[in-house]
Amino acid sequence: MTGAPICTPSKTSFSEFGGKAVQYDTHAVIYYEGDPAKRLYELVKGSVMLYKLLPDGRRQVVEVLRPGDIFGLAGSDENDCTAETLTNAEIQEIDLKQVERSDALQRTLTRCLTNQMRVLHEHAVLLGRKSAVERVASFLMHLVPDRGGVGCVGPIDDSDDGFDLRLHMTRQEIADYLGLTIETVSRVVSDLKRRGVIRVDRADQIHLNKVCSLCQMTGMH
Amino acid sequence: MTGAPICTPSKTSFSEFGGKAVQYDTHAVIYYEGDPAKRLYELVKGSVMLYKLLPDGRRQVVEVLRPGDIFGLAGSDENDCTAETLTNAEIQEIDLKQVERSDALQRTLTRCLTNQMRVLHEHAVLLGRKSAVERVASFLMHLVPDRGGVGCVGPIDDSDDGFDLRLHMTRQEIADYLGLTIETVSRVVSDLKRRGVIRVDRADQIHLNKVCSLCQMTGMH
DNA sequence: CGAAGGTTTGATAACGATCAAGGAAGGTGG
DNA sequence: CCACCTTCCTTGATCGTTATCAAACCTTCG
Image (spheres, chains in turn purple, yellow, orange, cyan):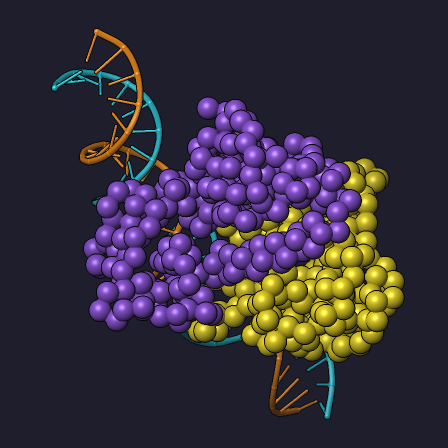
């Protein structure tokens, strides 16, 4: 299940620069930390995580990427993270040499990097200053579009402020993303369930009963 | 190791695009989180930190910048962090509208952002997975040039592997950067002193007796 | 000298990690 | 279709690291 690349055409920002679309299976490694950095990648469909390992095996997932995000820029000749898919994924790949040449691409890059940087800043707050409950609540809130951020639109309908979501991550991956252990993640989820804030339909399929009350638990209110 | 200039610094990057140099005092706020983002900044001399606050006052310092680093790009119309000097600082400032126009500037930006991103990734590992001792050791090692990274050159002289450094940060700032409390930072520093790894000449002036042995405590070996 | 800000140290508590079982869900082969 | 296996998840008991609370100690400076 290495994610044998099957090329298909696609119409994203990269295609016009000689990039080609590649399909990956779930949990396929796109590249390893320390590998020579040869390509720039744009996630078109699915989800990808970037993580780093310490020599003793401790892992930190540093980014969870969504369609439109780019990755593979290391700033040196080696990748600084391992990139692994969380789902089936379609990825546009383009040679780094091409990137050097294109002004338009540089412009796109600046915009993407700036956004990822903002996400990393917020994640640093989560890792450095939030409690376990706040981390899990923040994590779940990030999966709800248009809610919880500065531009939160509030409940669309006062009576029913629920939301269904798929995690696409195992408890271990969530734990490694949130800087917790798998047991703590599991306990917090169970606790949210017990308190009626969420309903766990399947391990990776969760219904938020009241988005606003979950949002109150993120530490940002 | 690359040894290469991290962020293609230099006194020229901004001045030729209509930027102007501004001097700041120690602990001066350059802009606040939430302020409209109008300018791009390049740190020329001194040190600057970026931090975020939670409503209840918890603070996380998300970046500590050095000459050559750029900041102020928010990816939206509001700054996502507060920027505050740690020392007297000289900063090149340029209007964001100018940045939009220049291809050369975009190229510089991509390179700088990529580097800062790598630093943020490593810091996420520190915040999410390292112990208090490992955090402080990593912090101190980052202040030693050419050591501790992938391209560590090792002791220049086997007999004397010492190094003098200035922190330019209070214990509180260090704590907020490392995701610890001021007491824990103080205790770890005292412990390193007791163990003979460092010598504390003044609160913010520390001599590393043996860089290599400190490096062993970063969790990366 | 006294005040203020920053730092250190001690005592105690709490949160999350660790250790240890047990349980559900999905996949495979008989 | 069921037995079995594997993988992932949950729960419980206990431990340890770091946070919290409190007080004393420097250092600098008017």
